[in-house]
Amino acid sequence: MSEKIVLENLSPKEYEHPLDRKAINTLEAIPGVRKVVEKIWEKFLQKFLVIEYMGSSLKITSDNYPEIYNLLDEACLILNVKEIPPLYLVNDPNMQAYAIGASKPFIGITYALIERLEPAELLFVIAHELGHIKSGHVLYYNIATYFKPIVEVASQLSLGLAGLAGGGFQIALNYWQRMSEFTSDRAGLLVCQDPKVCIRAMIKIAGLPVDRVGIDAFEKTFLEQAEEFRDFDYGAMNKFVKIMSTYDNSHPWTVLRASEFLKWESSEEYQRILKRESIIEESISMPQKLLCPQCDAEISENFKFCKNCGFNLQNLN
Image (cartoon, helix red, strand yellow):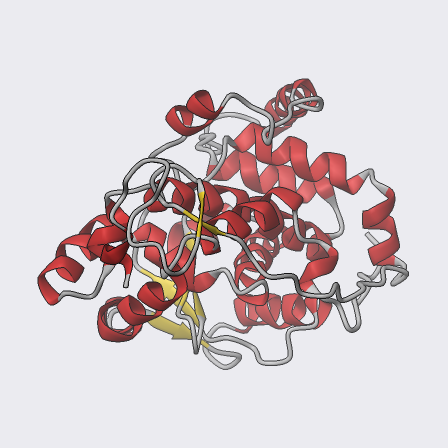
């Protein structure tokens, strides 16, 4: 492949998936959400994650592992990320990667990824996590990942999350977490600039035993499956099916993810970004509607109870 295009002055708004934007708007329309989430992060989650990852994982630098660090450096250059986040090697046999931390984010990758992925495929994974950081996903994403233990601790410390947990907050949070993956997949594609590399990385992460089975045949089948999803409309999908089919999953179906970024890769929007013709116009900010976390009905700041379902909105203060 020819030398990759550096995307100067790239804004995350240029490649943000519309379902990601819609989901985060719905999430932040719940009264008190941002305030409670920031409080949870400051009082509890930040300290835990710093100890969990930075205290037990090895930091990768240009001196001790230049081959991997250079991939991070390349991804930051292409995505226009000025401050390179720390990168940690996690002792885990599962192929996983993480973007962690709100104010000072860092990336964790497991040694299984390094062992099983080719450098170009690993570049896609690192760029995907970097996409979460560039788009400002990390705060809500970390809350979603550790939601159940957070609720227990928060209720004991009176941090205000208990009122949200009983309503639609968790559903909205989990749904947004899955939709944010579409945006970060686009970031990974923008760095790799080769959809075949992205597909191969996804196939391996999905669990293909590459040591025993050739990947080429599976790649053809995977692409055929992705093509079957081309006309799939996740946004218009029946709400009950949409929630129940992926309620406990942090990521959308792998084939659907591939289908989404393949559709985008063939779009005019993607080509304009590569040519640096994409211009983002800052829209005039409109007052955001407040929604009840129980039933999504529109409410007002001075409501004590939702007039539609009776949910106690005072729990959110």
